[in-house]
Image 1 (tube, each protein chain N blue to C red):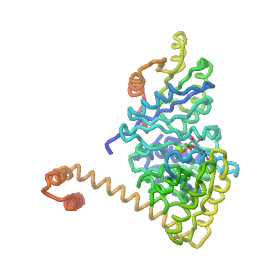
Image 2 (image 1 turned 60 degrees about the vertical axis):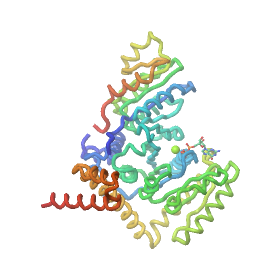
Image 3 (image 1 turned 135 degrees about the vertical axis):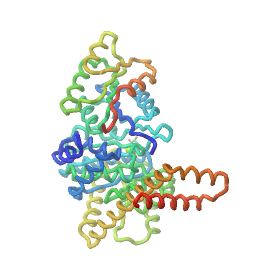
Image 4 (image 1 turned 90 degrees about the vertical axis):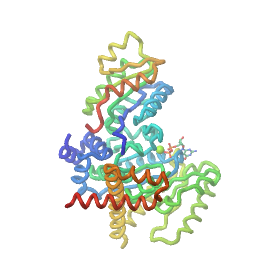
Length: 321
Length: 136
Ligand SMILES: Nc1nc2c(ncn2[C@@H]2O[C@H](COP(=O)(O)OP(=O)(O)O)[C@@H](O)[C@H]2O)c(=O)[nH]1
Ligand SMILES: [Mg+2]
């Protein structure tokens, strides 16, 4: 299937075309970029939701519940579940489907697993591309599950409108160890596993952390849930809908749309610059040359970085002439 | 940057048996060989397996079965895949497949048949040699 066939297929509800289109986006192929460009005008209809938090807090279980609740409301659901790749082999075991088995036989749900390193274009960029494809395919709600561990994962929040941060009571350590960046991008907080002791303490700690962050137009609600028993899921759906209504309805709607567009363009441009500049420096042998000089302490890393940038810019200028 | 796209493999357990130790060993071995393994858990119907293979756009589907129901379940997996137009995946199976059934299972399209005690290296090599390249 070429780009035109994939674009047509995604529009016609052809699930195989959708699956293949996602593969191309993930691999950042020529076809993938053409598909994204072709589909983009059809996007913007879906409610997009990110679900993030440490491994094992119950994100997949919660996403399964969330998807079921959305289905009960008659909304179709696309899910992207990202799991970390092994730092050694770059392979991955993607097991999020285990918690959503029943959804596999529901034709109103499409679920895709993704390895954090499997994508060649950068995690946040790839995730927002996959969200766009599912949005264009007509899914009413698109949910992205990620492990909120590193900066890459925090940036995934730019791929969705509403970010849900999931934590669990774990002697208080869990909340203390949350990445600062995550608190800032979350619009809804969930203390999952509220059947375990310490859920109220965790909620109180979250409230205190939010207070430090100061006043913002949207005040993130803090919910408790027992995902494994389906408790708290309805409240979560409502909180997400509230935030979506806030985004669409309020005087901030236009601004929020622009903020999201800006964040996406910046993040994509940064990734592209990074990739192209380093590629150019590598091709010219400049990178290794500078590395040698720094390793031999003939030059400091900062001036080497500046020299690298100068070299790359000169190369680009020569290409232009 | 350096890595090419990894091979995607679905490992599934059709039928009712509840042991997935073997399936997990294979999943880990393939991961350690640099592949992306989608593991769906136990008690999968043929339709669930085929639908997962479609949505995940895998190049390879590996089934693990201990219950003895392979002659009944495997053809149903194959036809569920066909119904969805998923006609380009490499199929293999492992678990308990009696010697007498191996030829039958291979005729169904399960090119690789790996009995208990198979060295995982053999499975890795089989997948590497026969899987189509992703996003081709
Ligand atoms: N006690 C308790 N365990 C839960 C709850 N929700 C999920 N779990 C369990 O937590 C483990 C990890 O769940 P999973 O959804 O895979 O977490 P993820 O890694 O964040 O996606 C599983 O064993 C779940 O059954 C809950 O509300 N209470
Ligand atoms: Mg998960």
